[in-house]
Image 1 (cartoon, rainbow, N blue to C red):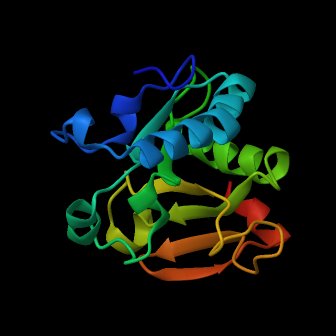
Image 2: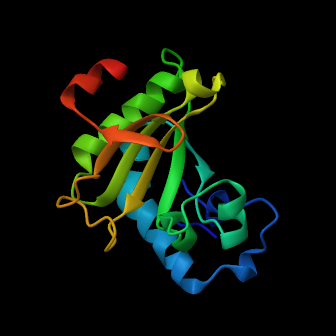
Amino acid sequence: MKLTADFDLSEFIPEGAPSRDIPAMVIENLLDLATTLLQPARDALGVAIRIGSGWRPADKNAAVGGASASDHLEGRAADLQAAALAERTWEEMTFELFDWLRVHRMGFFGQLILEDHREALEKPEKLWVHVSLRTAKHPGLADPNLVLVSNAPKQYRPWMPEHEALA
């Protein structure tokens, strides 16, 4: 099922999960996420965006160590990596994705986190952007945890302008 021109429902569901088991509310949330946040970023950056994790059923969420009240449980969040372009690495484009969402979609997302665990976990693939829709838990502009940076699992700090040097 196509959610937008560049995003398909299958990208947001765990491998092996039958699409018939996805609650209608989750599909609506994923459609909102893709339409409001992801497709505009894809269009603006001109780069493919890979969904590392979208909707997670409770058992999958627990298995990956997700928060018990994670926005992923309702299809309101996605973890993303951008593809490389000829002249830029996927890491550079993932930083660009974070920055573009932060600047151009402020007010549309509930939370945005740059998760860069490459050094802490000694795994070069552990860089991604977490973005979620606005919810009661993460209402957007009024939330002190609106934009965060994480350099190790479960460790977060507010994003500050000096973090521009991260990219």
